[in-house]
Amino acid sequence: MLHSLTPNLMIWAEIHGVSRNQPYPWNSYLVHSENRNVRALIDPLTLSTEQIQQIEEIGPPTHILLTCHYHERDSEQFRKKWGCRLLVHENQADLFEIDVDDTFSDRAVLWDLMEVIRVPDVRHREEVSFLLQDEGALIVGDLVSGGRKDRGIPDGQVGIYAPQYLVDIEKARASLRILMDLEFDLLCFGHGSPLLNRAKQVLRQYIENDSIWKNLECEREEELRLNPNLRELHGT
Image (cartoon, rainbow, N blue to C red):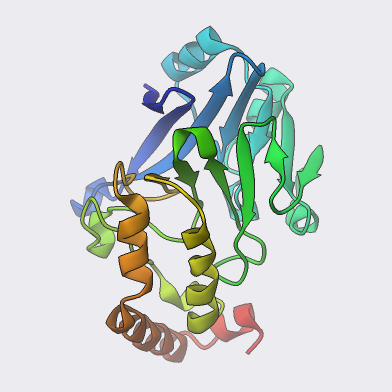
């Protein structure tokens, strides 16, 4: 089932890592507003028959939004099913193998409902987040993760998994500070359990903890040493 996080925001998830006894969720979201006649799927994963019925009771989706091109997931299937429009960041449009219906730009406010926040140089060239200002909720893709047992990140905390895929440690840290200019108390992730309160404070503490970033740098360099082909990903 989809679960409501706020009046305009719902979540559904797939559970991964069960075979390793390290279950954690992959997440997708539905942002909806009856007044605006908008129902947007964000980074949509597979939906069960019951979940489809639940969404259609609210109303058929009108749009699909993606935080990055790695999160196409079941977008094309749902676009065909409901005739909704697929929107991506204007600087990412050339990365998609599927057709894109329209693009959005940094700081665009979509339907007076959510603001687009571009966060470059972390894991993807132009990853974006979506800020629901009236809800105090921020939705991110792969920038950071919520609680997930496979990476030792407790529920109620944030972390970065697979730092070898970070573009650059210091650039990533600087880009994440962009999020500190926003007002939010709820933080939703592409991977890991959401942070339901005090989210901005928890994220700030993570970003400003020097020892965390030193450890990430060491872990990243070790992974790049073991897998030198990864350097090609970063052009180094």
